[in-house]
Length: 182
Ligand SMILES: Cc1cc2nc3c(=O)[nH]c(=O)nc-3n(C[C@H](O)[C@H](O)[C@H](O)COP(=O)(O)O)c2cc1C
Image: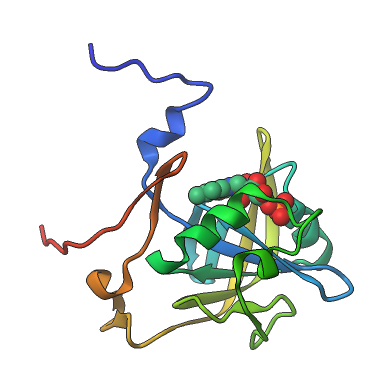
């Protein structure tokens, strides 16, 4: 009955699409790094907290462990290529801000910068990390959150204007364009 989904490779795709964001961290010397992350979610409203699941090989995870700070940056569809670049190269070997044509801008409360080209930003301080298989769940307290008023109106994304890239799996993304009510 139905299509069998490979538990080792594909189970998580049943839970996609997920909003693809950029997680920005910084080295002790202040050099920023950016990675693409689809496994992100809010986990508490009071205090405000967000979690990102990062693979053990990611340089971003190493930097967050060291500096205990990161920013989450929400892109629009026009940054799809940059999402791909930052999700397929490691900051250990490349300056992904330069490679992807992204501009770091100082954050308000944390050392890692935000990304100027993005529409929404969360500034986070690491509260706790939890090992989960080959990933670590980094749970951060959200110190600041702000978004472009052109795309975030009346407390929600204007999905048609914002053109938010959701990751389906592999090279496939979906862009939501319809708002419905129960
Ligand atoms: C669309 C997309 C979503 C991704 N989501 C995640 C994720 O949620 N967690 C993760 O660890 N890696 C994810 N990756 C892979 C990382 O971005 C990739 O391993 C990257 O090279 C890590 O960079 P870093 O070593 O500079 O931290 C994703 C890649 C793509 C293309």
